[in-house]
Each structure stands twice: as C-alpha cells, then as structure tokens.
Image (cartoon, rainbow, N blue to C red):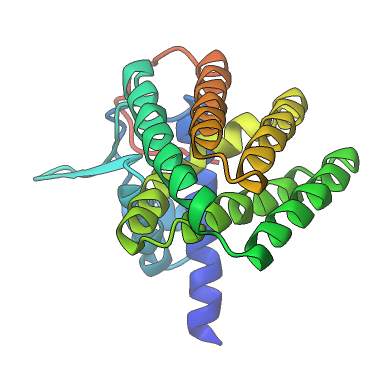
Length: 228
C-alpha cells in the first residue's frame, strides 16, 4: 500500500512539473531542488526523486554535476526533430503492420477508432488520450518486430508531454481523429504505402499543432524551484 501511494505521488508530481515545463512556467536551466519540491508538495524526497527520474527519461529534465536536476532546454528544433523521428518510426511500423496484423487486431483497431469518435463527441480529453495511446500501440505490436516496437514506445514516451499539451485543443482532437480514419483505412486495405503516408502526415500535423502552442523561451529564475 505504501509503495502504491508513493507511485501515485511520484506520478502526480511528475505530471505537474511536466505541465509547468511544457507551458514555459519553468524555464530551461531552472534548478529542481528535491528538498524544495518535497516541501512544496508536502511529501518526502523519495517520490520527488522518482518524479524527476521520470522527467529525465522524457528528456524534460537533465542531471548535471554539482547542480543536480535542471529543466532541459526545449527548442522548436528539438520538438521538430522528435516528431520527425517519431514519424519515421511509426511509418515503418505502419508498413509492416499493413502486411502482418491479424484479422482480430485489424478489427480491434477499427472498433477502437469508432469508440474514439464517441469519446471525441463526449469531449473526454483524458479518455481520448488513453485511447490514442492504445491506437498507436496496436500498430506497433502489429508490425511484429520487437525492436521497432521498443523504439516506437521509447520515442512515444519522450513525446507524451507534448502530445498531452496539443490534445488539450479540441480542434486538434478532431483533426487527429480524421487522420486516424486514413490510417485505419490503409491498414484495413493492407496498403503499406498508404499507411506510411498517412502516419507521416499524422505526425507532421501533430508537430505543427505543438509548435503553434509552444510558449516563447524564458530566462531561468535565479531562485530555486517554485512549481505549482
């Protein structure tokens, strides 16, 4: 029970810090002091340390000698590169999945896409985000290549904070669902070239949406972390 509570606390703290970093409230170079954060969130340093490790894995935080954890620099170029890399990996998975997915998997993908339409209509952003993750994971698994799947999931983990940010925009959810329709159609028709093209287009569109909402860079504060 104690471990479960600690994991919940770590996840909550990571999401709050993540949101502040993506929104530009915590500028690049800002030191994330474990003691200050523990006092801020009224927890021990253990869940704070675990939360920072999550953000290190997502490349939002960097650990530096003699300084500890600091906010990583998030530039337009870096985000573009991340989405470009994700587009290449997903396109590759899509091409293989178009040939290798089983009938049950294709049916599950199609049914999930229909469910996502209802989730979108209900304006359930969190539900759409969760279903969206499953949608893409079905394609990764359908590629029948554990190395491609691992690469895709690792890259998706890095992009997760940016995806959450863009899906807060309901118009982006609508465009995403339309793009998913093209992906599903290509996979159902076993058309690898079309699946490749649709997934590249989908990631390019996602990148443009994210860059549109990217806040201007801020200078780091000389004081220690003050996150909400």
